[in-house]
Amino acid sequence: MERDAAAGTSAAEALGPQGPGAGAPEGSSTMEGEGGKSEVIVAVVTEPQFTQHCREYLEKHRLLDRRHRVKQLPDGTMALPILGETLSEQHLQALKQRGAPDSTCRLAQILNPVPSKKSQNCSPAQKLCQELRCLVEGQGHTWSAELEKDLPHSWQRHGDLLLLNEDSFRAAHWKKLEPGLWKTVASALGGQRLAKRGRVSPGGTRAPKVILLLGAHGWVEHVDNGIRYTFDVTQSMFSFGNITEKLRVASMACAGEVLVDLYAGIGYFTLPFLIHANAAFVHACEWDPHAAAALRKNLELNGVVDRCCIHLGDNRQLKLWSIADRVNLGLIPSSEEGWPTACRVLRQDTGGILHIHHNVESFPGKELQLPSSSEAGQKEQRAARNSGRQTPAKIAKLEWQKWAEAVAARIGALLLQLHGKPWETRILHVQPVKSYAPHVDHVVLDLDCRPFSCSGEGVGKAERSCGQGPKV
Image (cartoon, rainbow, N blue to C red):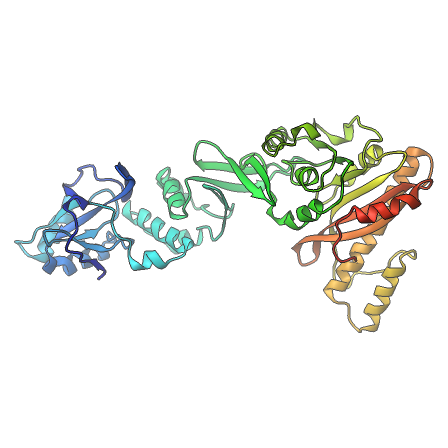
């Protein structure tokens, strides 16, 4: 039995006897005191010699609160924490009969109880499980393996807001515990607000299906590489997985350049281009009004609102022409619908660079014949054959190269059709961002596009202005 036997315990910590139905707080609750919020629980108080009998009864009937220690009060009696708001008269009488006719058995509120050793040493997920089990059993329901399996094993933290995954709290039984359920979850995980995600909407806005479970609003703020981002989690997404590409963008030399970001979102790439890469001006295209509103706030937060124009609506209807030194196409699984617009906004006189995002598939046993123009690809293919096996890394790189060459050819054809004269499209770099599956890779192609009249003079500048990792 865990016990707090400090003899100097203040009498104020035991807030007085409570009878059945006397309005004791629900399980573990809070109250305002001079020092801020204090925790209050309900306990059964009895003499020391009857403590073990009382404990066994409470355990048998699943009434004992294992989150807190049994406490010795100033008068020498022992307080055993219980689940729920109170204890029925039937249970109190049974406890007295189990002990002795002259035993005292009453309810009291305990201020700032001491957590049990088990509670102190458990992980947040374990603490959540303990708290919810106490909540379920405290309301007279049975805890089950099904409920435990339905608990979240991971979550995203956005300041004081916790975002749960869609595969948690699906059992119908949880509905019976609302709204107190969500306060318990947030408290156990150290948050004040709570939301749960669903699947991303299939429409082009990629809006998340997120329900706010606890709290007045879903606005949160992140600081990423020195840039402040704010957004409403119920309306917009924040991509944690693209940090490598955001850092690469931040390292690019874009001073004096005009950039068009065709899929700006809340500013994942728009802001690094402006703040770290020092682009002169960015035209940010976004057709989701919620994301556009967050983008405007983020431009203001970071002091660059005067260097960006937001174009709300379908970027295929964009009225800009021949203004961009650089175009970012940060949409997956494919940004192909934006390629014609990207070609239109590139400067007609000098051309520029396209950063094209795509999910490239590569599967073992797939035919890896590359276009005859790919000398590097042929060398890698011969080396793979000579080695006796094709490793997943080699297969992936060959597929990236093949995809990049197909994109370069397609963009070249679009530019020829648009301007009536040939352009040179040159692969500068293929940058891996992350893998979504064993054979699906998110990559970014840096493609240099120049009219033949000035293609030579643009190559050196293009290579210097792209922050490149190891070349494919």
